[in-house]
Amino acid sequence: MDALTAKRGKGAAKTLKGARRVAAAAGWKRTVKVWAFGNPIQWQLESSLVDPQTGYLLFDKVNDKMPKRDYYVVEFSLQDHSGLNLRFKPNPMKAFSVAIGGAQPPPPACPSPGSYSDSIYAICCDQNGNTLTIRNDDMNVEYFSFALYFDSDAGDQRCDPGGNNQNGNYLF
Image 1: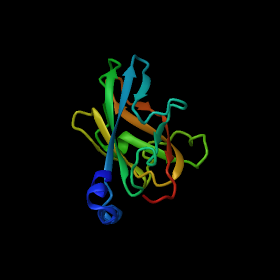
Image 2 (image 1 turned 90 degrees about the horizontal axis):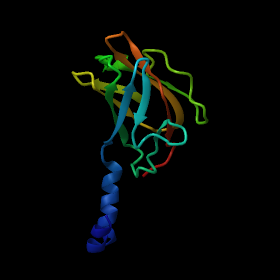
Image 3 (image 1 turned 180 degrees about the vertical axis):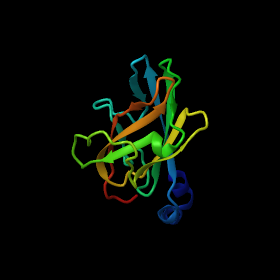
């Protein structure tokens, strides 16, 4: 926008800002690698979303320079080194559950299977069971807990880390 403003003046910047205001919401893709080691499984999440202080996934549209109306599209990518042939459950609603808490820590207790939210929810799983995609609208400051569910050669498996949405009411 700076180059455009310099070339065309404040009128172009105003037009661009107006166009952004009425544009449709867009998804911003993030990847979370879900590492599974050993039996019993030791879980580790790897992503730019992981807060090094808490280990929670941290969603912050201000730091990510995202318009408020936009949302995160998060791909959980399974890295299975457990020897158990892990794969996300094929039905995304059975592969992901979430519990929404308040604006202050700690996150709520681990969600029950089948728990969902209107603001954080599963979209799809790939056919091989290696990737689960969720949407996080991140419209409110809130802590949340989520769980990922897997099929394996040794039966059902579960990974249940926490999360933190940082965005309350502001407009871009």
